[in-house]
Length: 285
Ligand SMILES: [Zn+2]
Ligand SMILES: [Zn+2]
Image 1: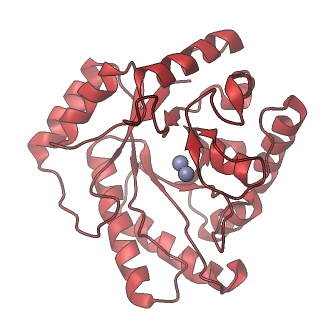
Image 2: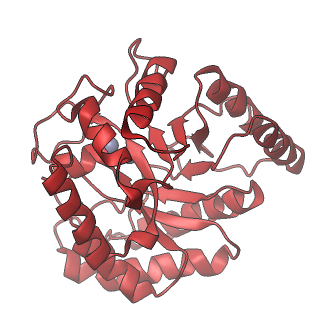
């Protein structure tokens, strides 16, 4: 299990590698463009090549890209759906060029229409993205904390989308904080194993390709998306040790998206806490 972190790619993709190395990360998640804007500029070939070379030299990987926060394939605003498809396609094409594992995105909201009502259009949007971005890069839906009308706090919803899309390239990223907020008590052995069994039943564990490692500022089942530093929140270090001890998760890379002890985002301290947890769990790198 590689321990990764979200790092800034400001100044160009290759810059992200050094930032990940500096905090001891073994893998990284990056934004390919500002997560709060639609504007997208594909990176130049030279930068992509440099990024790949430097990642390889540092033994860094797998890399994942995180899609922008504005995407909403379940929206009733058709223009918004079109922009979402275009944005995800751009990210997937970039991930493919960069040799990344794939792109993680939030299924976002059904805006009150209900999951069933937007399922078909969501599926259609995902299919269009995958068709427009051929290759090996995976498209990974992230489970949500369950606030408001957000899709994907239940594995059954993600599983329904995957079944309808019918592609080998549609996978899932499990965010530990979102799962906790959605009511999955993953720091108790029995509950964690129940959660993994449910994931396997509804989605298939072979489609669990990344995790976001975040502790939680809010209580179990709160439906609130608030990440905390590892060991400071409600899940606790023991919860991460437990997860790392499970064979089903042994090869799933983890990416920190924590506030940081100095409030500067994922840092060396969070990485080292996870590395220690991995040792305690007896998991192999
Ligand atoms: Zn996340
Ligand atoms: Zn979150």
